[in-house]
Image (cartoon, rainbow, N blue to C red; front, side, top):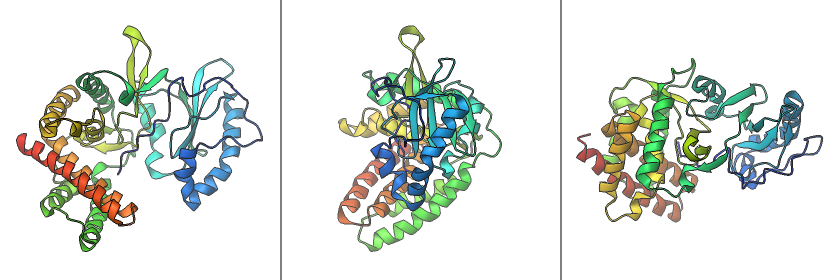
Length: 342
């Protein structure tokens, strides 16, 4: 599952003024949404229904909407105010499996480490959320990497502490499906001449198929990247909140890979293995999870995403080069695991 870095809420720079009442006219469609969900026939059909869904939400909750936020490839989001003057966000998701349990998990978190859920309409896949201000993503904050990672890990520990809602997909089941697809793509990539490391492929498959080590299942965010952590408040009252979960239940070590790769790119340092190990130990300590297990999940997820990129790149040579670069990073994660005794 490739990480999706698009936040559903953005900072005040996203034109929060110019509020308007949604009516018969179609809401503006951000390019990211048209080029994302809108690329498929099902997504294009959903975009055609979106004006009616937004209009129903406006009348259901008595909203005044601002212009939609430009980010997000699988949901339409806009700032809103209700009759009580509350500062809100309306989110309407393209119906897909990864968004199915967002309402349940946001309710389970109850605003503890996550954006608050105000209301929802299951049939329309519509959520009314509390707005996060200033809403600066973790990736955009000018602070030392260790400080940002520690803060993110503290939030993750709070999210993992919530009892999993009934019916969440099990990571073990999802991962086995990913292993089947990754194995098939690896065969095709090898036939196409992409240099693959059989040892990495075996290690990744073993983790995805359940050999990553036992752990008590927790409520997983599922897409814990630094674009999905936003700053709420200022000064001493500032805190970080998570958004846009793709919730699962399973091994807590699963969640940290995107965070560790995307905060202050470790591969721009002179010794990425040393930096990755040090950052992983910091995050594991703050989040209360197994560092060696997280390194194994990094190998598994990195390999699966590399093969995903090759497949969706049509198997062309530029895509093959991207796979080679991605697998070089996976090898560094494997070295980190070796250093941690994983």
